[in-house]
Length: 256
Image 1: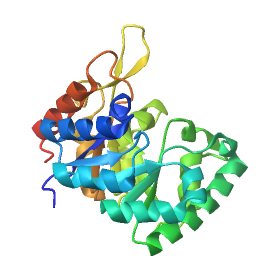
Image 2 (image 1 turned 30 degrees about the vertical axis):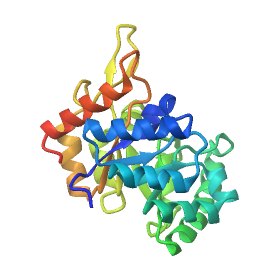
Image 3 (image 1 turned 60 degrees about the vertical axis):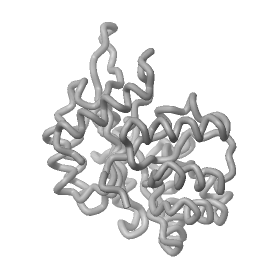
Image 4 (image 1 turned 45 degrees about the vertical axis):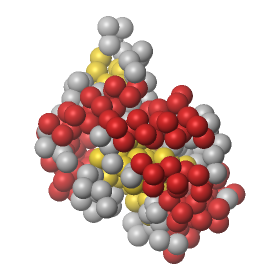
């Protein structure tokens, strides 16, 4: 068992995950940086059994994965089998397909998530949804994200708040974390800074402008199990260095 609740979201390192040899080398570097767990995403073709061996060899826990709705619809049995192989009890749909990006579509998407969430729960896997900023569009005074969670069974569809994208959507990350206390096993921790071009940019945790004292306090109260560190773009900095800066800063803030 890991003594840490911090996981490296592997999408950050997607350019280093194209082949099985790349994946093995990258997992070793992630462990050397100091991470004890990962969230699988962005992997190139590699047999699930090989990934299981790599994780075991490095002593890394598979805290969670990111996946697509399409894969869950088309390959559910194989998906469940590989997650059992990895000892992974959590997954999240990374993005809502664009055909659902309207008020009626949200309801249709909610129904599909409920159905898949029940099937996964029966197999011992917890399903969550990972937000971006587009879900902060409103219909009848409610954000699409609220509509999604109001129309799914909390037993089968959990929440994975992404702090950057909540802020980008005009929300308060700490407030949204508290809103879904008890339903939020996974949290994407991601910072935001304003670049020299006056545009919002991703930043290492603690190097940007988000209120981490409030976010981490809310997450603790909400019962977050895994804090998944992600940086979509490192703007020329070595992504491994970015992940280490974020890990060190989170530890400096008291997160173990």
